[in-house]
Length: 126
Image 1: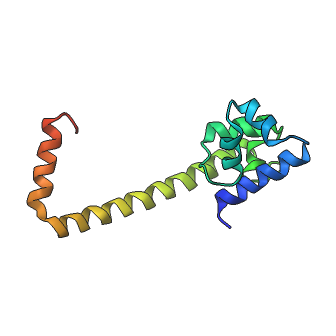
Image 2 (image 1 turned 30 degrees about the vertical axis):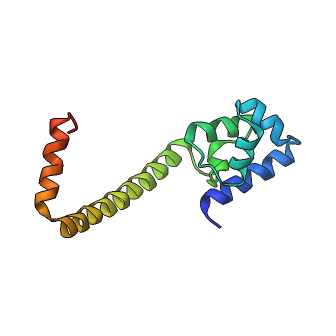
Image 3 (image 1 turned 60 degrees about the vertical axis):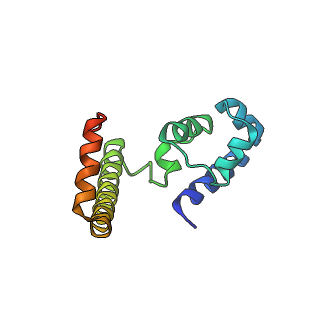
């Protein structure tokens, strides 16, 4: 089970423990019942702000919602750990992007890459 589906399942279980329906949650979040149901089924990716709102509505600390031990970890420690995780994810994505750029150059040649860069500059992209 992925981290996203674990989080979605956790939200569903907490909601049920609090005696709230999907309709209640959808109304409080300003969503349609279908959109909220998709969040709980892991079909829609949760933004940080939406997750914060859900955590507040369910009266659960965000750290706990994300699986961190809120008793033993201070907020600063949690932020540092989350920052480290995000930096590592950013490096992974940058490496993947660099690999795709290399493949693109191999497939289409440097001339096309240079021409695309010049066209981007002409229309105002940097």
